[in-house]
Every structure is written in C-alpha cells, then in structure tokens.
Amino acid sequence: MLSQVKNHHREFMEGKSLPVRESRLIEMNGVSKAYEVAAGEFLALKEVNMRVDKGEFVAVVGKSGSGKSTLINMITGIDNPTSGEVFVASTPVHTLNQEQLAIWRGKNVGIVFQFFQLLPTLTVAENVVLPMDFCNMYSPRERRERAIALLNKVGIAEQADKLPAALSGGEQQRAAIARALANDPPLLVADEPTGNLDSHTSDAVIQLFANLVKEGKTVVMVTHERDLKQYFTRTITLSDGEVVTDHGGKNG
Image (cartoon, rainbow, N blue to C red):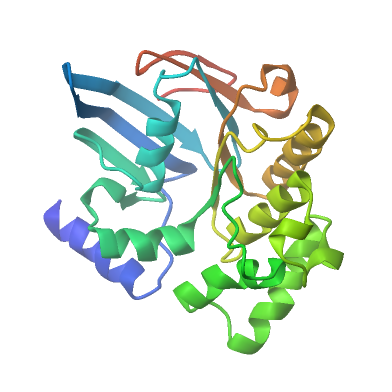
C-alpha cells in the first residue's frame, strides 16, 4: 500500500492525471473528525462512509453543526480526518502533506464558497487566471483567452475587466464558478454557494451547476435549498456528524 501511495504522489507531482476507480470519484471510508473544545473532544464526523460517482450532482444537507462543512473539508483536503480514508480520483487525500495538497487541489478540485472570496484588487478575469498561474496550467498566452471563455460560459464575459466590487452578488458567484473551472478539474465542491443570494439568482446559479454536471463534471454542494432537489441526482443528509439518509443514489 505504501508503494502505491508513493506512486500516486509522484504521478500527480509530475502533473499526470490519475485513473479513477471505475466510475467512482470520491470514496470515504470510516471518516471521523474530532476537535478539541473547552468541554473536551467534539466529534464533528463519526465513521462516515460515502461514495460519489463521476457525473453526480450531490446535495449535502443538514442542520447547522451537523458536520456538512467538515465533510466538505475532508473531500477537498482543507482539513484532515482524525481517522479513516479519503480518496478523490484514486488519490489518497488523507496521506498528503500541505504542499502536495495545494498542488493536488489546484488541479483536481474547484471550490466555490458562500462569500465568493474573489481577490478585490484583481479584475474578474485576473481572478480566473490566478489558479492557472499557480498551477502553471496552460501557456501564459492562453490563460487570458481561457478566462474570457469561462466567463462567457457563466454569462458574464462583459464584466471581465471590472473589479469584483462592481459586480452584483450573483455575478460575483458566477465569477467564482469560472475561477473554480480554471484548471478544468473533474470535481467541483460548493459550500452554501447560494446562501448569500436572492431566490431568483439562487435558481440561476444552481442551474449553472446542473449544466456543468450534464457536461461531465461532478458537483458536491452543501446547501439549504431543499426546494431545488429536482436538480440533484442525490441528497445526503447529515445529523450529528453521521449520514442519516442518502436518497437518489447508492451509498457503497
């Protein structure tokens, strides 16, 4: 197993794409996450097992404090499990150090946040180019052209040379989605991407994600938008750090 892990490390550090286990993109085995709090140890996740196949649009729902964001952080490598295994596109994410995680994440996962997190001093196009620069993807001449194409894809190409502050909330979220797509990752992870938007704009953003799934992307989204479940291929409900329901797909 150790030599397998080392091979995975070497391959993605060299920029090679990794084979996906059959159609499976995400595999979580017995994942627990404990935090030290004033009252002692708090288990944010408890022995979670989860499988997500390529091309799924998965909603992760649950009350505040149920473990949704922690689950997302396990998938993206933003945080490490206390125990258990996390594989994304066959990469053992739980074994990677911070430097390896940064490289892996930049090429394999697009992350969309509730509050956009666009850099305010860069134009919208420059924000989209940034991940390409960081991961040395595409030639310098291609990057701006690709950024404009992605902004056109999300419907805001005319905003390319404006600063984020000049855009509406919905436009900023579209820019954030374009940025998440910059390096053409197989997986998009979104943490409450419509939480800061009105209902009409929320519908449009969810539809945009649904269109990306039709094009072959896999999307895992933390959301409170239960009335939009017609867009999702699957809904996973968390409660007290455990998966309590998994509708619309197989969990295992």
